[in-house]
Image (cartoon, rainbow, N blue to C red):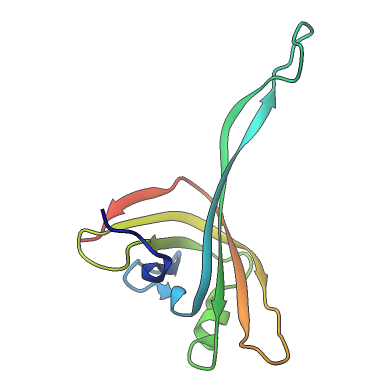
Length: 141
């Protein structure tokens, strides 16, 4: 079994008016990518229960965060496309691009952008995408 490493990862973002083929590659300057899923819980504790009892609410929250290093070659495209409130589809290819390899995607909106500007280091942008639906899993054609 082959090991999957993060260096093969490709992450793309397509605005609603774009397709997967025309999506902007974010991982070219990527420094890290994280997909987080969490379900809400319902408190169903009754009078006779010895402690708190919870059950899953069935409303998962999903978000993805990427740290992108940018420079003069890609800053214009990324800064124009990655604005809080923008909606689109986030695609990630954990084994890289290639026919038959897996691709995952989810409809998202850009919920947070942070652009720290250190004195003597490359500029980075931390972007959080909040999900508007389920994750779709498929294979690349």
